[in-house]
Image 1 (cartoon, rainbow over the protein chains, first blue to last red):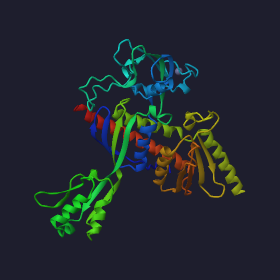
Image 2 (image 1 turned 90 degrees about the horizontal axis):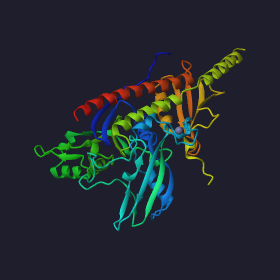
Image 3 (image 1 turned 120 degrees about the vertical axis):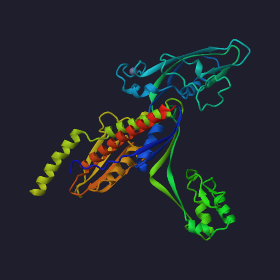
Image 4 (image 1 turned 180 degrees about the vertical axis):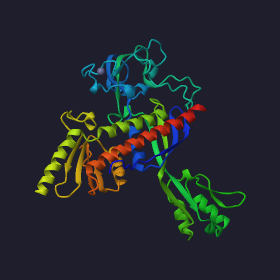
Length: 320
Length: 116
Ligand SMILES: [Zn+2]
């Protein structure tokens, strides 16, 4: 039986790539793979986030743990995360999780000395590692208000005399542990729809009926060709599997007028990240993490051996 | 106060085997695999891959309870194969599929980043 393989050869077509967004098609595989990749992108691709905060001075209006929580949620650039160690596995700092292999140190020191309210932002976090810094959202191509002066993520606001001084340790982690480590803003996939219009049956409809049918879909899936006045599929992927057109056709006494199938081996993925890693890198990291997980669930040699002995014993007993 | 550590969900405790295997005593070529600290992500892909194997008569997985961080696979095969062989084969095939997927993605990405 050796040499037999049931392997599949999936195909990928990228439609759009930006820094923190991408859209691609995944074909010739099944939903289990698509869903595994989605789940891993959300909960198991590692990033770096602030995990320990030592507050030196805090005379702000927010309490220590409130500020610590906010700091934890600040996305940090995490290209390093895949090759970094988890603090719990780190032997270089025996468990205190503060060495260079498993952590990054940050300092924040801000004091307001004027009558103007002072914003403490993610830009005030000073990193010990230039590759791990708060994500800069000012020049993202898809960016939101790129014309206004972007000052980073606001952590707290200070009035005259108030001060915040702290040291923070950022560590590698995964979204399964805490959502602050999730690199994903949204990751979704949909089945590619296959829409079939029965042209002969459609011919029997008046223009008004055609318009009604087209308008019955809550999203703009169908349209009417201005020349031929025929119902055409404008945007198959706008279909949300809501069944509304099918119900409409039924109500018009024309079941089978439109048929819609979900192709079971084609998926359209949308990936948006927090900026901690690039969207394309997130997908690659997810594949890598899934490979590592598969490797971890292989049977160990001693399990196999124990069973071999059991098998011989069983055969002996059956034979005897 | 007495909440378990969050990492309990995905770190295999010391002295616990990641994968354990138990033959069925009544049915030939049937076995249960217990995989510690895994969930639907691994459970479902391995099950679906096992279904592609024609020597697999039955393959299923379950997550017994949301607070028990393990999954169970039940596999029964024909006499041409064995649950262990089928399980290993499924993992190997998935691994190769992911290698292929990674290559595909990288070549596609190279095409797109070139005309940036
Ligand atoms: Zn360390």
